[in-house]
Image 1 (cartoon, chains in turn green, blue):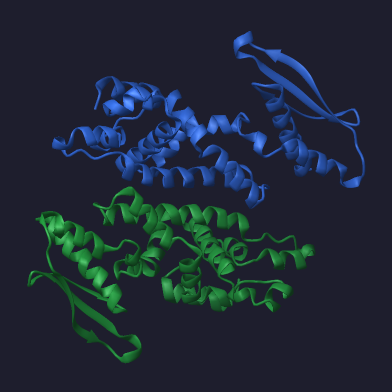
Image 2: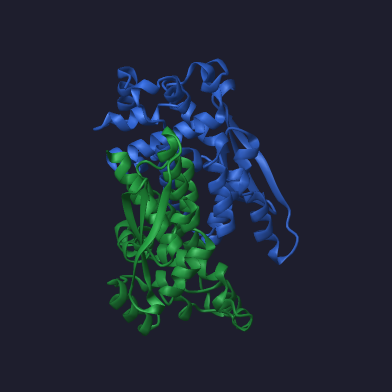
Length: 231
Length: 231
């Protein structure tokens, strides 16, 4: 396996593989295997099958524990927004995995290296390799550095629609006016974080941060609900 | 939780729960919660969400390890035949779980206790409760007693179609006549086991056992393939 890649995952995630054969398998696309039949290589499809199940379980457990009041239907919806092609391909790129996968020439020419489905599979293959090499706790540790912070920052909260949930909660006892207002904007223009406060009938209920005003509003509503439901 | 049930799972599977609240939750259907709103009970839907992911991972790992030559597409197909409503509801009945779930009166009247979807959810809820109480290794141990023997005996092998695989393997070098014949029938009429031998061009390649001739043929083909591919 590429030395630069091994150094990168050690530096970035503190991961050192015992058996790099798992990594070789995870970073080998079937198109590459087809073009090098003499080498008897394994493609990453079987290891991706395993990685997918590992990822599902760790994300499920995280959501189960961190959203104790969320009903099953919403947990399933939230999980599907995290464990999906769009999200996982994005994570693969953020981890620079796309630079290291071995592709066949045809796949390379057709920009396979940028294809979301391929990158999503690659992220799951990496998880599978890490699981086989070091067990489930190492995968948990890797996800604590990559996916969990995004869940915490509300990157997926839009599917849960906390604003609607808060409105339904507050209006159980009749009409109430709910207001979201921008408290401040933090950081430089290209990395701005918005802070929003939600209030009802003039009384502040909670604040939230996010990369967009919409995301910050969702987090604010979520926090308000957590506080209200704990009372 | 019902004492008879606790004794049954201890005797049958060697399982003793630390925290029976997880079991209570796993064996409470939403219809029961709806009829007992004053008791603030939890239904089994959230814990089933978790159990489903635990089951997927353990079965995936088992198949990954025990079928090292099976491509991803066939692993997925095989997993789907095991982790599905028909199979899981059957397992729930074999474990007598259906006797212990708390149902609402309406659900009971509509024969909910026999409904495959409800029993499938119940099996997954039990897995979720066991996982929360004792971790993944206990679930593995439970599945070693319930599901793995069925996979080993070829109960799901029909989806893999080993007979076609064997034929394709043998006929790479041209037409070959393949023959399956019944060697013997073991056991009483209501519990008969068939033993089948597969041969090609008169040479025996492997034997298999099953509850039907078809199942036994699949196992025989699978065994023949394992032997041939190891050569």
